[in-house]
Image 1 (cartoon, helix red, strand yellow):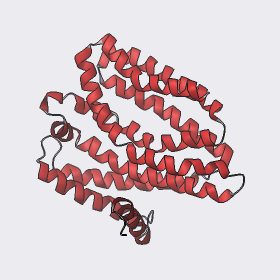
Image 2: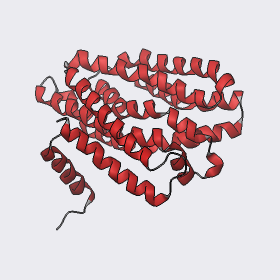
Image 3: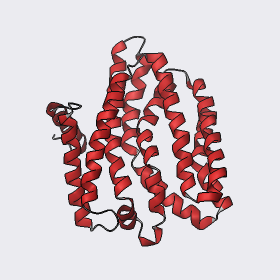
Length: 270
């Protein structure tokens, strides 16, 4: 089952590229993949957290307390990934110009269209790995195959009409099926409460809107590097501030996360 699932996921990652190349051409593939590589980098923190937390649910029958870290991790991933969405939506053009150069200007629309995928990709690895460690990987097979088929169908219909952005739309829609389906599986097997997660998502959405407003004040098309740094720092502070005001996070929790990050990044003393 895992062999088939991994094969389907590899195809899912490449189906957009294959169809764009077949329908439009190689140059269009380059423009699409440039944006895709940028968002792939943003998934690494979520994958690291998933690798550390998901194996613990294998012991859920022995200790129900192993479910709590999974629920908390889902919440943290929602908050973290939501903070990535405003820069992608508001600053897609200056970010692409900074990282890839002006010749990849068309990639900005693809990057902007991939925002829903970036949000969902935060919790996707944790949920899928949790199902694996619960010993129910076979249940993932129809979800994975269905996501590939849905992505391919959307690409085949839209690529001739709207170009490379269709690949991003197909990925978004397919992942919007893939991730909730895995959340439903985990909910059934572990009985994780979903209402707190929905509340966290709503509060993060409000914080994200405030963050987007701050970023827009610095411009949306051509933004100097120093302004990108200053605007990003200010917008991050505003995002955290809104989460504090809405009581989604506490000052103690922020301090704990900061301390954990420093402990993980700084070398330990002998």
